[in-house]
Image (tube, rainbow, N blue to C red; front, side, top):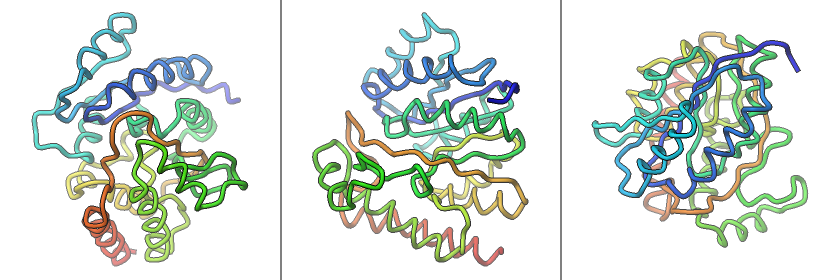
Length: 265
């Protein structure tokens, strides 16, 4: 491991994920103790939760001052929740990930340790490189796609969401001839100066990541993908796609983003 240490802000955009945060945040704190992080904060950016998210974070922050929450007052928006976290973060390096527990706390440590060995790079948690896998995978190289679908069916996650993410990702790679293999990741760490406000402002949902990766490539930023297995959510319902109509609605902005980015290449 590198002798470098970084100060890190971890951003968790959330709506009604208190049951998942209850497990995720303590897991993150535990993993950071064994990582290359000197100082850290966990910033929950809430987009209008009606569950007990605020009381949970208040309780957690009483025993750990590095945990805090910011309530958004603007119209709910995943991209702007992330950017609000970036703009309100304390530290030079920022990371963000889903709050549903699908991105394991142990992978945070792995991304951080990779970051300290490549301080000027952006590190992406990737399901589609060596060591990675999509939701429902139990054994890398052993679980078939259809077995993974059945595993997702047994969870609180969306099969539509899982299939959409996989198929749209393949389409996006084709449209952009991208060397980055997970263009719908949403799991990333790097210096906050690499992440521009306009990327998030022009986006409606997860397609912000397509714009972001394209911008990083155009500006010749080093990008490293690190494989991880995306887990199924334990509590709550997926916000990605629960029906064919929502799948189509979610997918169109991704395709539009890829076309726009391709024209800029």
